[in-house]
Image 1 (cartoon, rainbow, N blue to C red):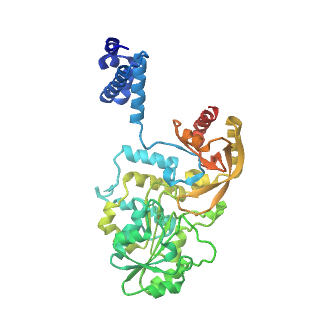
Image 2: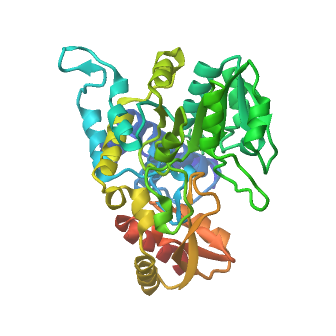
Length: 456
Ligand SMILES: *Cc1c(COP(=O)(O)O)cnc(C)c1O
């Protein structure tokens, strides 16, 4: 095109003001606000102008400019934290946000969000109360502990315990438990950060009671057990039972702290899994303090839960770090609602983590079969993982929908582009979907996404 023609075409481009009068632009203003809409229209116009200047002869309609602005806005306004469909079968998937909350925990969150609450207010006296009271009695009732404290997450539990009770003192731990839990949480580094002195005993695979006893000096404050969480030592192994550690701690006047990681209030061995250590057992074995996560097998919100002896918990509450690591009202609301399910003995009916663990194989097979009827693929036997550092290596038998495709990676990438992104798994060069972690209300979106990627 000659320059004169380009100039003519450029002059025909609409103004931002003219575009704003179109109904699609008006609905963009309603949805995203005026400044962002004006900005997006301006960008779309600039792009059109640049194309014309470069000699593009395709006529530019207002509709196309508006569509470009709209797509720009929807991408820009899309939150980075988005719901996804977890078809991996990993129940406590740390990257996908770990435990889902029960309906009543969801409702409790909403209630605490929309109303003022008694977070730190005593209705009897009309005076200031303590947030620490909220989950405490329920946690004591369920675990048999004397006292309890909730903090932001379990990493915070350990930091608080070590800083408050072992600063500048020795903490004895088995070499087999000096683990890195993920996200850079390394036990030796946490100790250093907290000002505690690490005293390693035993070997990677064997630590006996005598190893602990020999390592204790005047400076020692604590024996610490850390659940290995994400790995398993097999073969020639020996760990000192917690009750034996408790006996040593009592005799030598030391604290015994047990970081259970996930911890559980229900017996996992009833569901065809290994027996994950239970919080109640650690209390009964004589640990002074036990800490575990709120959003692993407990199935609640992100939290660090510390239970144990009254004096030690009181010490922790008074430490200035407790203020920095404290749980918020939303956490307490969801945690209490979750704990209520345990109190009513209805955890497997209402807490998603336990519903998923308890889902019968026949139901999973029926679901996978019905999916295959609708979108093709074959149903194969597979394994679901509990995840979240609980029960390392343990799996539950499941049924998978398997798609034979030429490029599994490309299919996985396209599944992630769906409106409700689908996270699947590749197994033996096939894309597989595990019904165990897919919610009933997500099934139609999942099947629509699969249809889209297999049809073209
Ligand atoms: C997961 C885990 C933690 C960290 O808990 P968060 O709640 O993720 O902070 C600490 N210790 C052990 C043994 C764990 O498994």
